Image 1: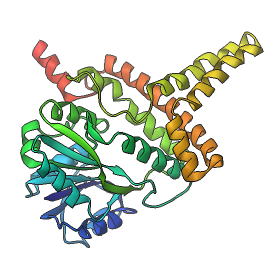
Image 2: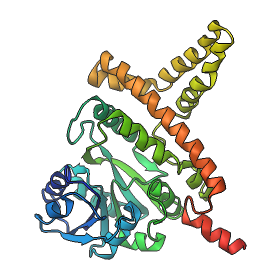
Image 3: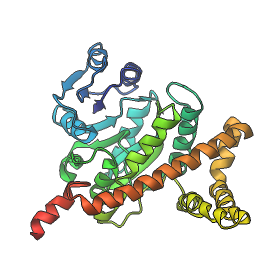
Image 4: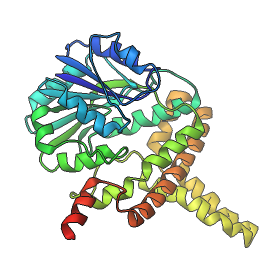
Length: 331
């Protein structure tokens, strides 16, 4: 097995991530760190470990880094690991066992621990709780592979093809569309990693807005018609979107403010399982903060998706490379 870690300015976490890799019960054949033109000490930190460090001369994004890592690795199984995810000691062994037990499975990927790698405050606690909950709820055969901590046989990777280097976000979804057409994808709670996430509200919302811009373009070229993992309930997204849409009704009559208020209540009640989970882990007080943060995230997601849809319509270079190939073929 080869562990491939794409990294960009991950000096805070990379040491802990590599320590977790070298503490595995199943030792990897090799570890390849692909430095995507970092401007911090990431490359120097990687150099302290017995891994192969591949340096990209320019920043090309995670898809290109993963492809470069595959070309510079020697294992028959590729384990992709983000540079902010530290693995539990048995993660590699469990991933290999699952792949060997079912030859029809083309990818095994894991879940995040309920606790962050480094606890930097309420925003990161919100992210850790939500990320753990929806992944844990989805374990089993799924439609989407998430390559933050994922194992894929090299033969499968070569059959499906490389990651789309035109995508810096939603690359997992596009790749899964190709992968799932021929192989099973399995999410498992036996492959676990602690994730260091965004810890400030503004950057978190900005990240969600940016990432969601590719949701519509990727969905537009999916051959399997969606059906992948859903981090959020669609009804919650609809309720959140209706709050700002209906808020201007208050200009017509104050009592009409009840409409956005009801939409906000609808949003808060959209996922009772998630609410119960948060309350059990952190208490009712944190749940109130969680709902507020979750609402703001939904607004960022919906706004980003709308902006991305417009960009998809007006910019032929935006989105998956398959669109450009189709356009060239049609012309």
